[in-house]
Image (cartoon, rainbow, N blue to C red; front, side):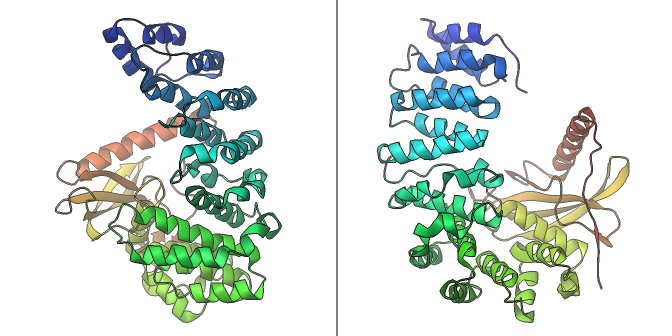
Length: 425
């Protein structure tokens, strides 16, 4: 748990001439939870130098920069703009400063994020790819970055990030084609190049998640031009893509533009766990849930798809699990009532001979009731022999208690699921 400490005293210890004092302070720094009142201290500390770290200021300054994102304000934006040029080009500190702006995710922070990247991207290296996860999760201010950020499409790593930002903005209705005019002439070629590269990449490769995200983002960006005949034809072709999750994005855009899903498409996406719940939610949103095949509308089928979707998330593995197998279910008492948990195993990335345990849930005890997202679904990433079902159940109860306390402190009541659906035979 993060702690409140006297940050000034801790910074003084980090400057001690005694290595043992500095090392102890560095460990304590990892547990610090600063508040807004500590921002001036953080600004001064980031500008300072630290004994023993002449070759690698990353340990201290990197930790301090990482603290700015959750608590930063307008003063922080001005500070980062001022200090950024003085941060070394190598070593990752500039990336952490950009990450703090992304995590702040305000209009002014993202405008500066774009400006700094435009001015300094060459110094960050040809393969540099900025982290855009916080912005994609909540793209409410992403439009401030376009179209000016398109000026660095020639930088390969930045180009991937730009498409991810554009795709998220288009999908959220925050960006339209007028802000992406520079992409219109190149998007088809970029898709073909990225798609060929993805096809050559093994799903087991560490490169696969990044390349899958890139291809998916380009398809989402196509949505800004979906009314154009040439783009519509391209999307129609992508509906047959080998990767179901990519094909589904194209189908969803076409469906919203008047090219309705046909029976074969619905069957494919319902059969495939990685798209099953996305399809169901899309049909529910358009009040066509009766088109969803009854054979796949059951609690076990939804639980399997929930497990796969969790593992494919950006903050998990970013790709479908290899060798997913059902490993049983357990009934547990959660918030005063029985709930059902589904367990699965899949091959470990680290050691293919090991199997990792994952959990979907909690689900309603009644198998006729369905949910599309388990509140605490996921995996610890450890082999099953080290982290079994009992450990998951303990963590689930701990997390439910924490979430329940947080909801109560905000005057709310924790809900395990916002809505349930009925299974079909």
